[in-house]
Amino acid sequence: MSYDHVLLPSGAASTLAEVDAYLSSQQGIAETEVVAALAAALNKRNAELPQDDTFLSTESVGGAATGAALHVACPYDAIGYVRQLLFALATPLDYAVYDPQLAWLMDPADHVPATVTHGGAGEFPYLTKSLAYQWVSGLTPPNPYLIVERGDQFYVQTYRDKSGSYTLEYRDGAPDKHFGITIPDAPTVSALIWDWATNDRTRFQALPWTRVTL
Image (cartoon, rainbow, N blue to C red; front, side, top):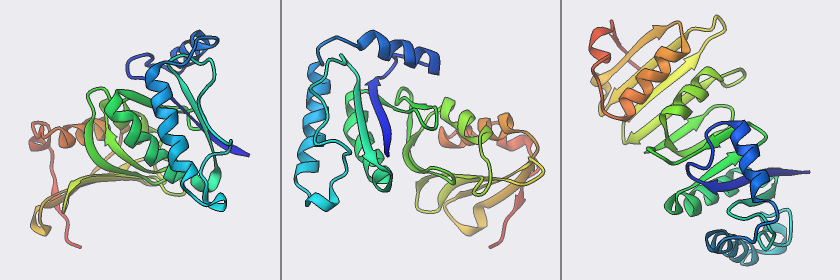
């Protein structure tokens, strides 16, 4: 059984219905130069590994009539590695990564580079406003947390408890600049995380933060 990712141009779709429509529209169209280059890079990396360590579920990817989209299947134990590789290759080319299993479209348009750790799905290399809202609202047990890091001791993180409320904390470079608050709703938490990621602290100033000591 394989885990699928699909690469498609940034801006080609913004909803899941639009993703499906776009992918359907690419069927029967010769692959683009960008897709051929992405496929070649993936195939080269895969071929360099011993047979037992390869990360593709098929012998190679690309070469199909899928236009500007590239389908990549991998074994479940290679999901993290493949995802990071796809982001590394796709983001500089303005390509989005679509995960049909999670129903997530990760489009790099207007992204903020960061190390984002999603408790249920692993690590991602950037945050966007839409992903902040989607990820926070979808946090579920057993690991309902999200961490966004932009440097050593510069991070914002949230944890959703059993009541549905969120513990939100941020640290700005040192232990004495670590503050927390409890917020009852996902949209507010999402907005604050995005504000922090984009260095906008306007809304922070109006909230009753308390210092967190670890």
